[in-house]
Amino acid sequence: MSTVVEIKNLVAKYGDRVVLDNITADISSGEIRVILGASGCGKTTLLKHMTGLMRPAAGTVRLLGETIGDHDREDSWNLLKRIGVLFQNGALLGSLSVAGNVALPLEMHTNLPADVIDEIVRLKLSQVKMSHAYSLFPRELSGGMRKRAALARALALDPPILFCDEPSAGLDPQTSSGLDDLLLDIRESLGITVVVVTHELASIDRIADRILFLYNGHLLYDGEYKTARLVEGPLKDFFERRDLHSTASHSEAPKFITENIR
Image (cartoon, rainbow, N blue to C red; front, side, top):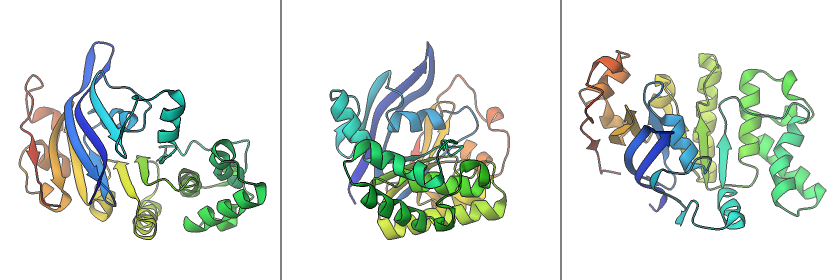
C-alpha cells in the first residue's frame, strides 16, 4: 500500500507551550487510522496539521507526496482540495439547504454546469443515505442527519483522504453505530483513506485498522488495533477508562511502541 500521509518530527506549539513533540508516523492508502488519547493530548491539533489548518513549529507533514506549505497559496489550495474534512459539529451553513451545503465545494472549486453539480449532489446524498433530505435545512435535521449531510459535503470533490474530527460526538449509541457502518461502507466502496479522531471505545472497536495513541504530547503507540490492548501502561489504562494522568510522570516522555505489521 502507498503512503498518503507522512508526518516527520512534527512539533506543534501554542505560543511557547509544546503540544506535540517530535511526532513521526505514516498513514497508508485505504486504511482507517484512528487517533486516540485523553482530552488535551493533542489529537485535534495533529488533525489540524494534517489538514493544513495549522503549520508546524518544526518538522513536516506531507499529503499525497507533497509537503503542506511548500507551495505558493494557489498550489497549497489545490493540494488541500484533495482532502475531505468532517468537522465535529458538522459545520453546516444554516442559511443553505442540505443540497446547497453539499453543492458549495463544487460551486467554489469547479466550473461544472449547474445540472451536473445537482447530479453529483444527489449522488453524494445517496451515498450517505440522505436523499430524502435534499431540500431540508440544517435546523430540520437530527444530530446524526447533520453529520451525514456534512459527510456528503466532505465527499463532494471525491477526495482520496477523509479526515473526521470526533464524528460520534453528541450522538446516541445507535446513531453512532450507524455512522461507523457508513464510514466502513464508504471506505469499501470508494477505496479512500479515513483518518478519525475519537475517544469512543465502541467506534474504535468497529472501525479501526491501526491506531495512533497520543499521551502528553508524545506518540506512545503506532500499530494495529488488534494488538493495542496487549500493551501495558497508559494505552491499557485508556481502554480500561482509568485515569491517564496518574500513570506516568509528566516530565518524562513515555516509551514509544510500534507495530510494523500491516
